[in-house]
Amino acid sequence: MVIHTELVLLTLSILFFLSILAGKAGHRFGVPALLLFLGVGMLFGSDGLGIKFDNIQVAQTVSSVALCIILFSGGMDTKISDIKPILPQGVVLATLGVLLTAVFTGLVVWYVLGMAMESLEMGLLSALLLAATMSSTDSASVFSILRSQGLRLKNNLKPMLELESGSNDPMAYVLTITLIGLVGMESEPNYLLAIGNLFLQLIIGGTAGFLFGKLAVYTNNFLKIDNRSLYPILIFTFCIFIFSATYFIKGNGYLAVYIAGLVLGNSRFVHKRASLNFFDGMAWMSQLLMFLTLGLLINPSELVPVIVPGLIISFIMIFITRPLSVFMCLLPFPKMHVKDKVFISWVGLRGAVPIIFAIMVLAADVPHARLMFNIVFFCTLVSLIVQGTSLSLVAQWLGLAQEPEDTKELKIFDVEFSDDIKSVTSEIKVTENALKNGNFLMDLKLPENTIVVMIKRDGKYFVPNGRTGLYADDMLLVITDDYNALRETYERLGMPY
Image (cartoon, rainbow, N blue to C red):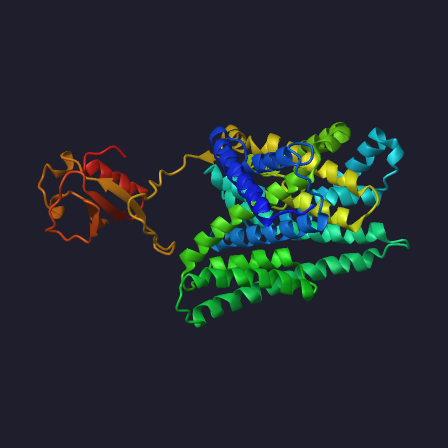
């Protein structure tokens, strides 16, 4: 059967469009967009509308590249000044927390599957492997849910959760790869060698990410490229290079791209804003493509036999093993409030990463690989439904949610300011009431720290001065120090904020 390229592209475009519509609807009703992306993939899969996709290698490649971009983008969006106060807690959760979650969950899996599916005869190492695939908090889920819902959290919880989820995938990856090797060994496993390789990958990955990140900043600033639209492409090239080069020097590529993203995002380089916007879009496209691919890969009918053990494992992870790991890891930090620890425990989201690791298990063809994949997929669905839809509610219930600032996003003036400029911009439509003291710009009773930098009138833009005459319905681009100053500006002009 010949498959036409045009048919493949048409199908992909329809899938993408439906996923975007699903994401828009999900945002309105508080459902994680990633869950709906998965749903669209499953709907169009072999058990749905009949698109047959069972290429494990392609799924693994697509998912690995997508996760690489997501982690790099997440690092670029994370400010070191935000994570500095909670760096020790985040590092402990991203390393020891993953290990404890894998061990505790592995023991639960061994017991539950032994009770529910006695004929499997799954050993402890296989149970630990299954648990290791689900041991990390998924970065794609955390980044997208926290940012799409505009959730503002007290006590530096948001940067801590983003740091943990962005940096704990490497630990889970190394655990998964190590346990795949141990399960596949016919002779006695060499545990000391496995532990040594684990630490070596993390050290090499972290070092490579830092050095390659510095190299990317220097190269971006040193090269004089005439076409400025190529600068984001240059950063993207470095992202892929860092991930792949770190693999060949025996380091962890996922940790390397996250660290490199942190270095770039907290450095000054040419056309930084354009690169940040480029990667923001790339990250969302990667999430969409990754979850669609994973949704197409699963056959929902195969999930039926794992519903009971999957539900038991999911709820034990949500309510016992994840909280136990978090509270044990944060024991050295007595100043952290119990409510903070409870919320961190709740944000132990499963997502694309566990499924990607389960695909690695499939590709390695270890015993019970398909069963492990189905359980991981089912547990991911439960996590996104139970935890992903309730993050805002739990934050409010614990008293950790803050009122979001009304940023008044610019729509008329297509301009952006660097994050280094600590200011707030807004568009204000001139009213007759605002002109009651005179028709000149200098007659507006603006606060001292507020200036009008541009005016739009009859489709034309111009820079004003104090003697510029104003008319009703003129659009002003205003820049001021902070939201309090912006609120005062509206009040002085007699307008509701």
